[in-house]
Image 1 (tube, rainbow, N blue to C red):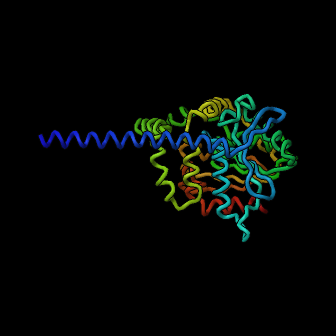
Image 2 (cartoon, helix red, strand yellow):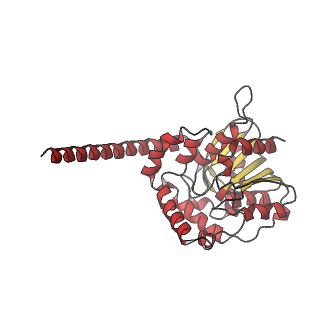
Length: 310
């Protein structure tokens, strides 16, 4: 009888704990969505609406986020960069324009499906903001549109930075073809797991303990996949269809940072950029993964900051 009572009590406590966690997650999600909407602006440009957020003061820097992402991810990247950029007055030395690429958050996919169309959207956003020139940072899936901005608007692109960025035709299936069955299984399992918001929600308290700046913000920026899914699926289609870019025509000074052990975007993409862009600086992070810009932030971010301020 005592055993049955003990088991019943344990079940009751477990059920109460799970229900409490679910309620807590739902409350967090509702607040997070409201915060996302309140933290940005939407402007109707000549080619369509775009969502963005501006921070800091100084020369303009556009930030094209990864896959998946949104303006919140671009903003988190700007905070990571500003970790080493603040002056004695504690203000950022650049005006960071963090935007949501088409299909992500509140920027409709119709504003620009292809990297070229997204580059046109960036230029139109600058027009609306009254900014003639800007540098651009494209990291991960933001690489193609950043490259296109430099190619299509050489007179407006001051500097170009590609961080762990896609630079040529990309297919997850082809990338994984050379992996062992165990590696493929783990990658597929991880991909599904990382899109499970309740799990990521449970990880948020641990992200706050990380020594690097913006850890929690970067984790948040891949959550709520449903409002990022359209952009993600479009990115996968566009990356597969990428044709070789005339990289030798890029006039802007270019900074490329990539880890040699990047399992998501091959290091070969960085080598391609370094071999063809005329004025390029390649920073290689030996054994660095796809998040090398974050895991090696204290080394990488000052280099990027110096590049932007030279």
